[in-house]
Structures are given as C-alpha cells and as structure tokens.
Length: 251
Ligand code: 48F
Image (cartoon, rainbow, N blue to C red; front, side):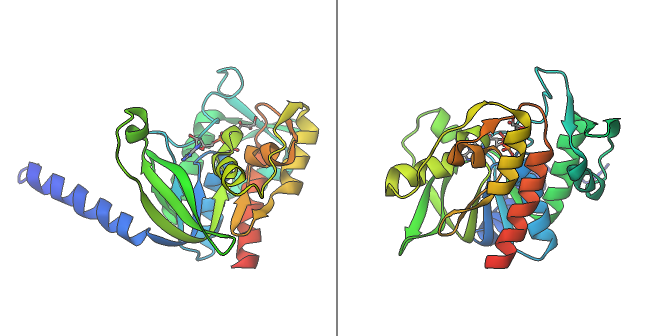
C-alpha cells in the first residue's frame, strides 16, 4: 500500500472523467434515464456496436427497481422477459407459469453492471432540454442535478446524438419538453392500473415518437395514454430491448 498519492488520485479521476465526457459529446445514441428500460437499451445498443451514452439525474441508477412493490424488494417478470434476465445473469424463480420472481437488488445491480460495460454512463446529470434542427432531435442539453437542486444560475452544456431515447419513466421528461416546445407531440398521460394491458401496450408502442426521439418503458404509457402496471418489470425489460432493435434498424 506504499506509494499512494492524494494528488495522483485527484488527477486520475479528473483526467479519466473528462476523457469520458469529451468522448461522449458525440454519440450514436443518448439514453435519458437509468431505470430498467434505459439500462437494457444501453446494454443491447452497446453490445451491437453503437456508441451509447446514458444520463441519469440521480446518484444511483436503477430507477424504480430497488423498492420492489411497496418497499418489498422482490419484483415479478413474465416468461417472455426471462431470456433478458438470463442474458444479464440475473437469478429468478418460477412462481407459477406466468409469473417469475427476481430479487430487486440483484436485478438493479445486474442491469447496472452489464449496461455500464457497454455504454458510457453519467449519473448526477439532468437532461433539461433538447436540440432540434430541421424538425429532428439532434442532441440534449445537460446540467448537473446539483445545479438544478441548488437553483444556481449556471448554464448547461450540450451533447449530440443520432437518436435519443426517453426512458425517464413516469416523468417522460424529454417527451414533455418536446411536446411543450414544438406542439408536435401529443402527451395522452398515463392511465389507471391494469397490469396486463399496460405491459402489452408498453411493448407494442415502444417506438419513435418524434424524428430522432424514441420512447421506452413507462414513458411509452405517458405518451400513448396506457394503463400503469405496478411492480411487474418484464414489459420494461422487453421495451428496452425493442427500442435498441428499432434504433439499430434506423441509424
Ligand atoms: O422510472 P424508471 O424506473 O423508468 P422505467 O425504465 O421503469 C419503470 C419502472 O421502474 C416502474 C414500473 C412501472 O410501474 O415497472 O415504474 O420506465 O427510471 C427512470 C429514470 O429516469 C431518471 C429517473 O431518475 C429514473 O432513474 N430521470 C427522469 N428524468 C430525468 C432522468 C432527466 N430529466 N434526466 C436524467 N434522468
């Protein structure tokens, strides 16, 4: 343990962080939100060779996974999603033929681990606006979450991407901005609880909603007016994989 130097530690962090940031100023795909759908999308895009960057406004990634249902930290997935759990090496057990149970902490940790190997991930970064040229999203406007929280008057910076994924869950942050600023994206708003209809609807409607802007996970429900579904996560995982495949077919 001899030879450790505080200034070398600081220099290593600063140099490597800014190397990552500069490299991420131009990406193939920028994903907003590090919940289940965003993490799965990041993994598959990176796996298939797309230069992918993910921005998460909170300290921890994982979104709504950690607390399971009402803080009972188990989550349910349906059979169709177990192949994604297998790909991420996440354990689960069969509850009945339609319901499989995974540990929420292992699910969050496993998705984060694999996604961070395939994509550049920035936590503590809030996406506050988009760039649009000729009717197409060309990038994002980002700032540190701490700036927003402390209400400091500090301008953001920008990053470019050929495609953007709004995976911000119930917030639908990027879509709400595009809707408000262009008037060209209708937000129908998430509806009442109906788990099966919500899960099917989220997968079926995972799509490009504005040129260059794709939706995955609960944001799909916010745009298309679909039911919520509570602590079943298969639809989020499958939606993340689907959006990665859709983008791969477009860019
Ligand atoms: O909410 P979240 O987990 O989204 P998801 O992938 O999954 C939904 C499920 O968790 C759960 C469900 C349905 O009942 O199964 O709700 O659709 O993760 C969204 C992430 O986006 C981040 C937010 O902190 C969260 O971690 N986020 C939201 N707005 C922004 C953002 C923003 N403007 N910039 C960066 N990150």
